[in-house]
Image 1: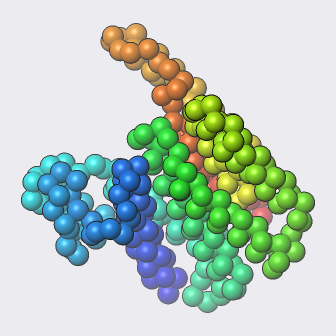
Image 2: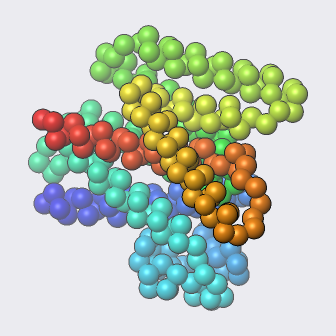
Image 3: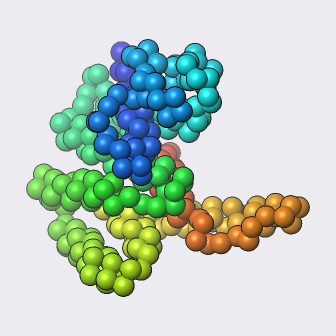
Amino acid sequence: MNVILYIIIFIIGTIIGSFCGLVAYRVPRNIKIFERRSYCPKCNHELNFVEKIPILSYIFLGGKCKYCKQKISSKYLIIEAVTGIILVLLAQTFDISVYSCSLNSFIIFVFAVLYFMAIMIISAIDKEYRTIDKKVLLFGVIISLIFMIYQYIINSTSIYSYITYISIYIILLVVDTFLLRRYAIDSYIINVLMFIYIILSFSQVIVTILTIIMAFLAIMIYLVIQVITQKRSIKKKISLKDIPLGFYIGVCNIITLFMTNLFLQLAK
């Protein structure tokens, strides 16, 4: 029975992943999320129900629009598949089962799903545009604040760490609102720090530190590969301003969370 449950969870995950892909496409373009049905960005044709089925529609259509035959980016397929896998892993982590599942575990599972949605959308937008959208950041911050309140009320966790996290967020918000905007300074780094704040509130200190270390190593590897590649061809100079920090931090956080959980499971 658990196998059937996990298949259902995977399917729900792919639907959520499809929604995340839609948000990542529309938000940077200032298109309202629920303004209209999904459509092909090339020919503007609205997709029917069958054409919107996650993963399967991409495979059956051969990665192309049925009408204009333009190639559909594989990133949507990747987001759908990865989100489905993440939900299954989360279900296993929080012991979501047909036979046993506490209300507390289910609620934390829902929080975790919302958290990963924020991570996926922020990372996808930053990968393509090197910008961290404030509206999506706000969504992540609200979820983290509600999660903190829930943890304090239900699980009686220490309030002091949460006060610290909230204080950090308020400081960053004040700097962004009253200092950077006043002098028209790019707030990308502040947005990255706010993103780290969201990660910290869900992942706690150790996992957040490991996430930053892994992201730093991934960026170093990327830069080394770019240097080697550019020696073989004439290309523009590598600039740190072109590196999507949020993307690397988001992806590394997902990897770190599941690796940490795996090690804890093996240690039992």
